[in-house]
Image 1 (cartoon, one colour):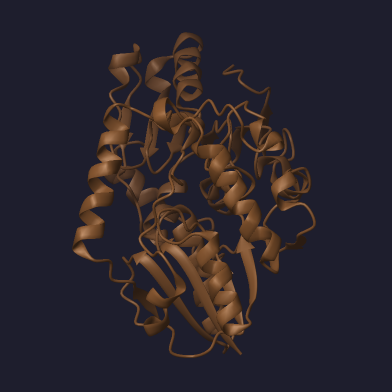
Image 2 (cartoon, one colour):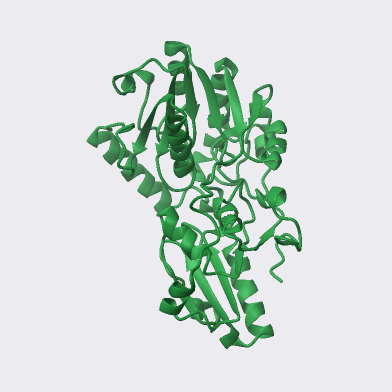
Length: 368
């Protein structure tokens, strides 16, 4: 059997999850290759599809203009704007050395459209499975919908798109609907909560659902002796070590505002010198900007799993205040490291956290 994986990238978030599945297939002794638009892994089994410089340049300029005006509300993560690096299946054929029996599709925004995936299926006769990591498969372009239910009615009057792009979500929805009606597709979900979302999405009506739990390396994410690391960071003497993590620490859907409110609450209720705040992410935070005077240490982005696992073990509590998330992976990784998690009742928290035993489920949108 030959398996082909198609993902916009091979690292971070959904890209990292796709790469883990690819490596898992290889480790099982099955032939597996991966096609991406942006490659980071030093792995010959992953091929980066070369995009012409003019197309790259034009797409980049258009996207900068759209973001500068802005024409899309960033809180909806509207990435599918009708432009793709690959316009048809023929542009991928030279990268596919063995006829695929199975094609796994992941986060493919800006890379390929469902129309191109349909062409690949028709070309090779392969079975296609879409790993669902956010809500984009059920919408006309939004990866997270906030409180919008427009995807139940073909994404009409979308609040995410503005000006001349107001009708784009509906047009995207109709194009996806057309491709999906011809595409023999299975949907892979990773949590029981996600299954209910998929069942209620008109765009995906009739598609077969498969449950495959997310893969995490328990040899990496586990309880570790970090006494030496605590001494080096000078955090061992604190009574409570609170951690928050996100690729972009100030990302709205990750509940940053609730994290800040919770810190303000801790600050008012406890002695400041008893608590230290630790963060993982691309950039450090300026807590003083929010009126927070608690001791603070930023540990860096921690892309390496071993470094990330070590970081979790430094904490007594991991706060995961995501308001809309089908994960997050950090919540699972933290729990594997023996660190209890405080989270809202969304995403994987609904499936993993036993209230007041291995964590705490807070009332949604309540920071206290």
